[in-house]
Length: 242
Image 1 (cartoon, one colour):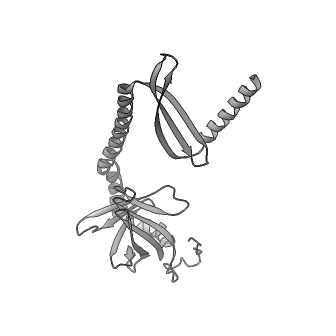
Image 2 (cartoon, one colour):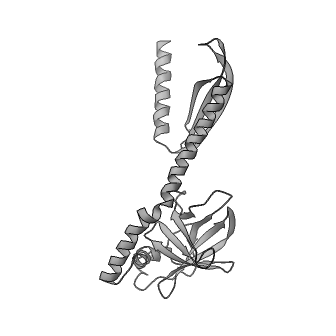
Image 3 (cartoon, one colour):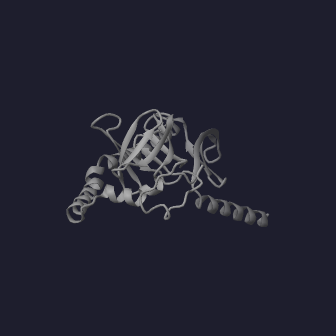
């Protein structure tokens, strides 16, 4: 019996470590009405199941209590998540003061001192690798059309949607794209790079919710006629993205 307990403990520890080293794929909660040996009465149990991307499943069950306690417990969990979400959104609201101001200061210095800009450097540095690439465009959670991302002769970046809409882009480095005059004249929509998407490059708007709202663009590959800026033909080799 001691050997069995030791081996079981070792396996559980190994599974726990394996889960901790992997990203969470899904997590869900179940409620179970059962017998409480401590009080000799029935009670609610809450079981949380975490499924990691590497296939490891980590179940955890705790005693909650009577019905009123179970209701309050579930409500508190949801309320805590809502408060966390509100804090994140508030930080986004404050991005102008926290993030935009340093960018504008750097841009003003670059322009006054070196006659260049954050946008221009971003296009020069990251634009050639994305020039003449094909992207899937999703609006409000629905696939809209394919689009061609290319550098224009005046060295501006533009997304040309197959349906006929052309949107000028203003990049800030390699992780932030501003869609100018979109969705209408005088407005701007910011897109931010998603850190991981199976190796594909992807940008999403702040209000993106799967199958509901926002804008999402996903890189598919390179167009057949790839145009490169002067001096870049030998520096960049075509990729085989599908």
